[in-house]
Image (cartoon, rainbow, N blue to C red; front, side, top):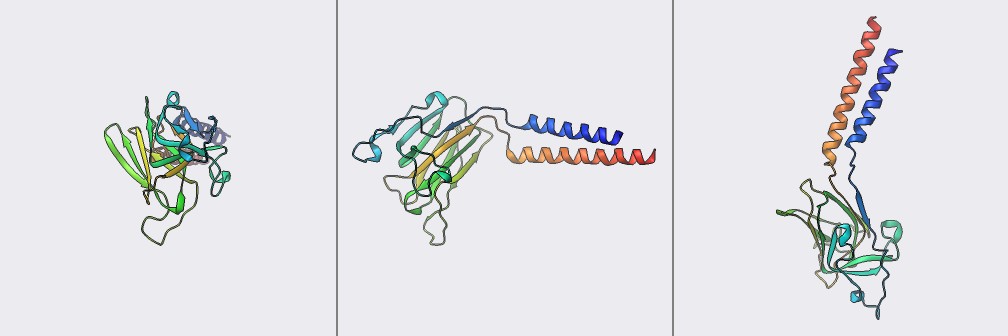
Length: 212
């Protein structure tokens, strides 16, 4: 009986700590579908975006509103009616408080790779690239690749460009970013250690009950 009580308490404590470790910060999702696009002669460059989302912490450089269903379609992370098309580069600037976690769905024309440079206030933090052609014939490509970026120091700027360096680069949709998100590996290790401690405590209690 006592063993079950302690086990229940242990599980409750584990859940409470897990919830306390879960990110509490607000998340921002931008799917670009809240803006009405008015195309002119089918040109992608007729509707540039700049500070439309500044109140939500984002300023866009060299980006344009385009139709949001292309390639593998909406089921792959792209939602109608709009998406964000980059020019030769696409610049995402985070203003005010800097997010520690950013994710987005990324595509590119001609199955090319997209390169991402991620900056903090101190300069370049790291770089990433999507799957696609980048000079090597042995490559894989799919539309709407989910890219996840994390930096505990905060992300202030993301620059995206594609391998062929054409007048258009990355196509992105469903941009999402969060603030004060703990590093995933750190959270996992803390939860794992807590689970091991609770399991050890259960074994000790069980031995005491048997001895009594």
